[in-house]
Image (cartoon, protein in one colour):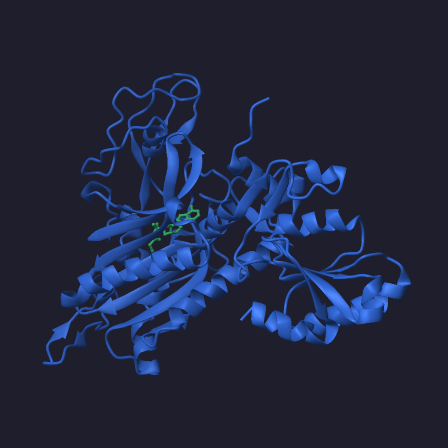
Length: 461
Ligand code: GAP
């Protein structure tokens, strides 16, 4: 039997343990749209909070939550109506449809792009049936909808393909209301939508996804130092939250790959290991967008978007952007935390000898922080167990599990990444102590019940 890849195991765990479900599953699913289950919601919320806290820990960055639907002129100004497209090929024989550059990458060929952003396909054939492929065509990725009751082109609007534009069009509002001085940044997390040609690899490429973007407005002379600073800061964020540095790297974009707005782009890549030729893939982009966005919005909105330097000279701020995917980051953290221990970590019972899964998520990301586990379902333990549960429940996400052997319950918590388990046994009734077990070291400590709150305050500091 073919050995499952780590990626497949993570996808399976995500589904069976309540992290990520295919959307609309009872209707057969909706291609590349996913729902987050109870644990996935917690994990994603922890990740987003960590990002926002990280961004706003700087005096010069403030937050925003702009709408998904915006004035349609914005997409003309931003260049998305004309330039936000992917190269598409069809198979003349089996009618399969593919993203041209992905076909090349899957074969280990680095795409080279022409002036129209179409890659040179050489003598590439259909990967499904070997049939001849059509010429490359450009396909706009924006989802369209209509505002108001009439479905006519005058009422056509778009689902935003990036959150960034909501920040640019609020540049003046934020600067004025918050009395921000140049340079400064605006951070926002929100949904984005792209009608991807070939989505796939689970939540890596979806049609509805979430972005966490920060746009830093700066004088054109200062862009290099700002770019360098954010490049380092963003890499540190992933490492600090537990991703193995060996699985992360930077990749500079070649000039023929740059998006229409970018002067320079550098990706932070994670080793997703989707296939032999698809190991490191983009997690986040750091982009030098120059004055493209504000100049374009100034032109189209006819509102002045320039600021004055110290000598009173007017300039359009340049933008350094950090643009990460919440779903991609969630997937990367899940993959990096997924650890399988052949033969199990303990040998006290037969079941422990099976391969054991431990999700070594950083404590700050773990969906459940503490599991309260009465050793037995007997009513004698219920009072003390409920007391411990009530002590902790408002402060942390807590699980309460009293079914199955204690070994199995520990493993259930290990698989979903719970850092600590608190076991209440019959001795607890006498000595007023409980056992705290650490997920990673499996060390067990006896702690006085009265000390439990203090103990966890220190652990989660
Ligand atoms: N504002 C710039 C921008 O949107 P991008 O490189 O197109 O840049 C930024 O996207 C990030 O958004 C990517 O690094 C990725 O993490 C995430 N992303 C983009 N398309 C995605 C998709 N179809 N599914 C999931 N995440 C996506």
